[in-house]
Each structure stands twice: as structure tokens, then as C-alpha cells.
Length: 376
Image (cartoon, rainbow, N blue to C red; front, side):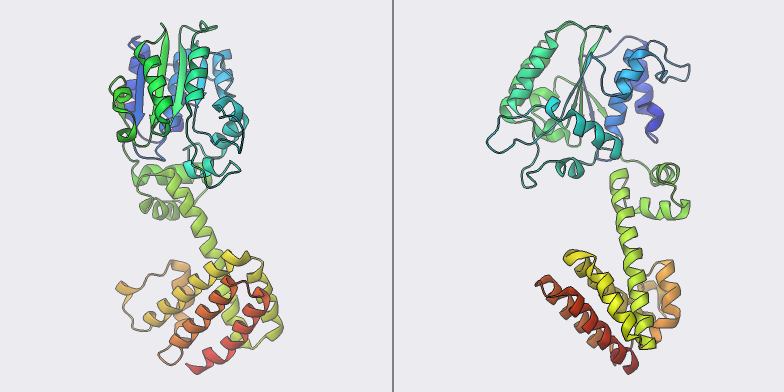
């Protein structure tokens, strides 16, 4: 990771570079701010920059020396990673090192560290990952070993607010009496939840939310997203790349639901019963939850089409694709049938949620639409 992998935050990057360049590195640094803003990337870039033997004139780790290559693969001998994990049923309390392969894969998939995605890695979905006291004990052992290839031994601790009480108190003693050449980099989404005595012993470095333009630029450059659409997604992401990526997933699902909605209405208009049977099977393939979400989406679109007939765009909430379709379709949704269509959709959704045969429910609803859209 390089500093340039994080959009914006130029002031923070300059402060980190200055610490290293002027050899004014604190023994404990707290990088904190909203989730999804690139704090963990900054921590990795800073550690890599400190260990790099040939940093570039632009203030980046070179990416080619042995230290940089080891950092890239999470294998630098003088860098320790600590992060929340979940205890297995009946087993010992696990350590971060037990899940390094999963953590490497996670950071590759989610470089802005979406905690919900990390929690989903573990088998026990109902247990919140945390950092156990055994982690602090193991950390003490590892830090007792002299640095092998660098002047600095670095600990990057993700989410110190999830330290258990015993683990936090044990870590406090380590931070209070650090070995020479030891740097703790704590990366937090909520500094107020960290043990105050730990927080007071760290040099704080606050990272603010990203601007909409920075998020949009990242989406365009890394996700090949249309710049206009990227800015729209970024606008509701509140400065978080993770929220923007979740928004992309939601937008992708909405497009799929929109295609199914359009297909159904055309089949109903054409009275294509065979096509409706195939349509019912396609919706059933979404699974129970997916089908329920489709009917929720379809209900919204029916209501929006009903409102569309009033020619008051300020109270319509349709995207460009939906609005284009509604220009011709809205005339089929009036006061004569809108409420009945919505009731039919609600009934289909309830039946599917209750484990009824989804193919039969979807086909039955589709056939009803033949009559309902003709009653406009």
C-alpha cells in the first residue's frame, strides 16, 4: 500500500511523512475517524514508508526493496498485525495470527476495511469479533524479540475500541513501557470508545470524512464506474468508500429488479402466459429474501408511477432509467387500479415470506396483472 492509494487526506499524509523524514516518530500513534475513509491504508503505507530502504522523491515507499515486497504480502518480519477475531465454540481464544490468511484476503477485497464484511468471515455470525487478552500476552512475547531487519518494530492494531477489558489493560502496560524502537499504530473508527488511558498515551491523528468528489473519483478509477453515476452514489455515502460500495451493490440489485418489473408489465400487456411462467421462475430463483425485496421495489415503482401522472416532478423519486419507462407506463397506473396492484404485490410478498411455493405465487400474481393493468 502507498499513500497515493488513499484519496484526499493530503494534510494527514504530509504529517506522517514528516514524522518519518525528521525521525520524530512517536511510540504510539492513533489514526482515528469515520469508517471507510482509508485509515488502515494510511497505517500500512506509513509502516511501509518507515521500513522502506529507498523511498521516492514524491514521498512514497519505493515498492521494490525487500521491505516493501514483504509489506505487500503482510510478511514483514518486524510488523505485527492485531485485529478482532471470534472465538470458536469450545476452543481456546484465538489470536490474530490464526486468521492471517483470511485477513489478507479480506483486505484485498475490502481495502477500506468494511467491518461487517470482516465479521461475516467467521462461522459464528451472531458473535461480534473482539480482541482477547491472549492477544496482548502474545504481543508482549513478540515484542520481546529484537527487531530483525529494521530499526523499528511496528504493531498495527485495527479497531482498538474492540479490545476486551483485560486485553486493554494488558496493552496499556505494554504501551506505557514500550521497548526501544517500537511503534504502535492504532486505527480506530470510534476513538471515544477506546480505554481513556490508552488514548491519552497515543499521539492522535484525526482523519475526516472524504469529500463526494474524492469518493466518486475512487469509484471511477477503481470500479470503472460512470463518473456521473459515481458522483450520485458518493453523494449519499457520507464520505465513506464502504458505504459507496454498498450503494453500488444496492444500485445493481435495483437495476435487476427494474428489469424484472419491466418484463412483467410487458408480458401482462401482451397476455403472454408462457412468458409469465418463465418470469415467475426467474423471480423465484432470487430466493425468498430476494423475491420479497423485488416486491418491495415493485410496490415503490407502482406508487411512483401513480404520482407521475400528476406531473409534479418535485415529488417523484425516479432515477433516469425508471423515469424513461414511466413516461409511457404511468398511464396504466391510476386511481382505479393502483391500490389493488399494491395489495396484490403485498399479498405475494407475504406468501413468499411465509414459505409458500414461490413459482406458483409469482405466476398467480403475474396473471392477475393482465386484468389489473387493463382496469386503468
